[in-house]
Image (cartoon, rainbow, N blue to C red):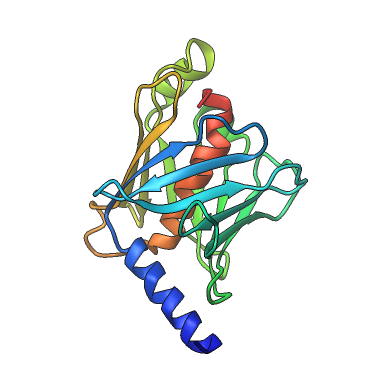
Length: 207
């Protein structure tokens, strides 16, 4: 198969995977270095596998079509080193196309997690916020056993929900794009955002 056909085939496969509305993300339990996540579709099949490269000064996550990591679909790379307000570029690995970026609101996220969704030009097009300031403070000051919930909006219109299940041992997250009835959010950017929330926010919530 020619390179062009392989690239087209990979892109079509990715669109099919990304085109679904609901996913469940599960953190790989026995993972000593880096981080790894299985992302399942509604039928319970593995739709994606994500792995964070260990011992990297700049955080580097990859999303693959499966655990064998034979087909890389997305890359998520931090622009800076250990920055509370880091920006992460999201790139389609099958085409080299830059999809957009995600930026953590550094100081504000100390109290309540907030992320900005940026387009390819770096303009803010949406945000993802933790459920409430009160619940966020309870998690930080009293207990991290209260599951996190995030809502994503674009232009004030809901596009996703991200809900952590109560499980003190294994992190499981329900990701739902069904509220995005107008298809405002590029699902590749949505999946990347969910993986980042699992990897980055999970450190402080104990997941």
